[in-house]
Image 1 (cartoon, helix red, strand yellow):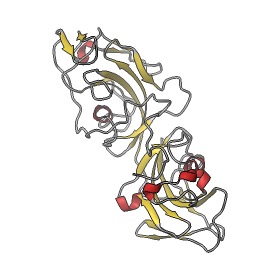
Image 2 (image 1 turned 90 degrees about the vertical axis):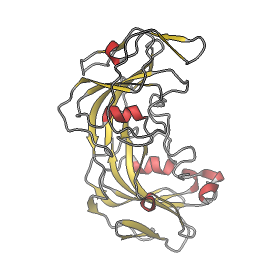
Image 3 (image 1 turned 120 degrees about the horizontal axis):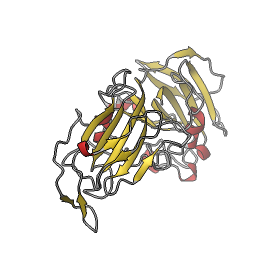
Image 4 (image 1 turned 90 degrees about the horizontal axis):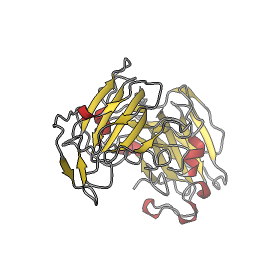
Length: 326
């Protein structure tokens, strides 16, 4: 269990639960698929009553092509395919999305049962959602719809793996807005921190912490060690970071993405991570290496995090490298 959040490291309540169907465990799919089944009456084992499928292929689905307006998805309900399917509605002219990139998109989803909308970020007023393309934490058909497509594309996808009821299909339209390759490490101007804070040294790119003598601060400390030269991180964005976390009391490391050999991504500024991360990371710039000293009230509170060996009185110290945001 990652100790980044008292709730869950990566929330499924993205954009007020609009992306709940996108971010679930699944196997990474390697290529785009196409459903070529014919339009014949079949039944789907979904819920009571049984739903009759009159559309069984994306050939029977129409999507609007005006990229300046919210897409509409129309078909003769209900929809039920034989396998995940992806179809490019409008081909973009930007760079091709690669696995491992942070991909930002707008989306609409509808249920295959009757075509009613189940989620969208259009009109939300906040940042567009982002995912790591090719990630095993993303519904496989979403990876199929993103990886290999040029930025600027509008892509239609269908799957029965995005919901809680077996046999019920969901149709998505993704408008791919941007794709960013996360940095390998901090990138920017070094900053000399004030005295009295933990000392950060680096060995082959991995930071380590040496705690000072004395009592821990009682207020949140947010200290850039490298001031990144990238874009400013906004609340509601997905950020990609590498980090190491230790306890002020004894300097013991309780978690490190560096040790696991892979950065993590999560929603920032929305309560999906501890308050010290939300408050400390929002407003920083991509490329920043950040030192966070987090008192208990902005960490795990009086209950602590027993699974990580953190008590309710522990002050936490993190070094966080902000590698991407979108």
